[in-house]
Image (cartoon, rainbow, N blue to C red):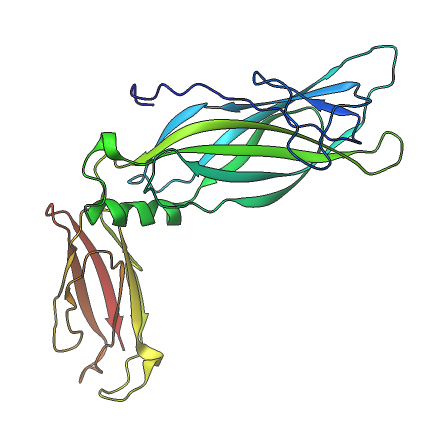
Length: 277
């Protein structure tokens, strides 16, 4: 985690009107609309996230996740405890700066009985990070201090079946994160190895076409072919383009191997090997 993050954990509280369950955090009690309230409560639900702030490295292909701990506290020991079922969570992203791109959140199903510790929650997948890499390579964010900053808000929810009725409960917490490029991006080309049976060209038949996906590294990317007569080189990919398609020509004496070499703006190389029958 980088030292420029000074964002503390902000825990909000959500409450259901008919749930009989109180969600609690450092922000106090907050009524967020129909169904949320604090009447007839005997259980306090608290949600904490680790870490509470993070730098998302778009050059790291690993999926970024969060660990959540959901704790409960019986408010009145003379009354029965609520039996709380965890059914899912909702993730929403809020940009902290104007002009930053929108990130779409989602709703995810879970199934457990509270309390729950060490729960893995989805955060940001490699596809989203690749989109930010394209933006940075396109010059949208010039330096680390200008990388986009967001807040991610998690809301866990479920039902209380203590009385046999389907009553709802919920609790929420937020964290801050910055999306940027903090390590050297190694370029990659996928698939790295492929075998295809080529049909004669020109044939207007896409059955032997091969699509390659490029990620990492520094744009622009330059693609060269070891045998341009069999596979034409696409040359320099336009900024923001991360895929290209080739149409192999049928070799006179198959099989034949062709190597596509990708070089990024920093001189880093990735290779794809193609066997053509």
